[in-house]
Length: 122
Length: 107
Image (cartoon, rainbow over the protein chains, first blue to last red):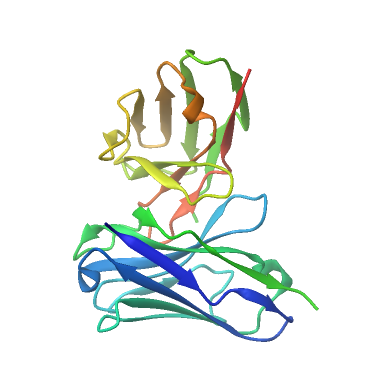
């Protein structure tokens, strides 16, 4: 059974940093692209960042480019999102999501974690 | 960026009805469109990909159609479990984008 478990969310002051983690199991992690998608409370979905299976291709939404860094550790079956210079508008549930395509990067997701809430407030 | 526009924003329908949700892309995306269902407090669930391919395990009352810039999600015989918010998502570009969502409510 595929499982994606996010952690690392919490309350943080504007301008500070936070690192999210996503622990994956139930599939061959090093064969799939992984992404972060966020959702502000009561709002719609927004793609944040993605990384392909071998970290060759990485992308970011314009809203987080230069502030967030995605990475993965295939030996630990883990995905990360380093979030720096956080702003109030970054407040959201952050979901880790698995790409549907093996050894590809379709940017469409068939499994999602339960989400971790990041609140940016003073 | 490719903008995705869904209509309606909210839809009220009784159990057993057939409902249709429309999604329009600001430029052609071929068939690179997915539909997700999201219930309150839960993660999105993939229903349809490549505009009309049913994800494994999804009931056959869900169907998708369209190509280019106009797409539809149809739910035949709406069930109590189907009341949720539905999102379309394009994955034609390297910057995936979502529609704003359609909330399906019980009438």
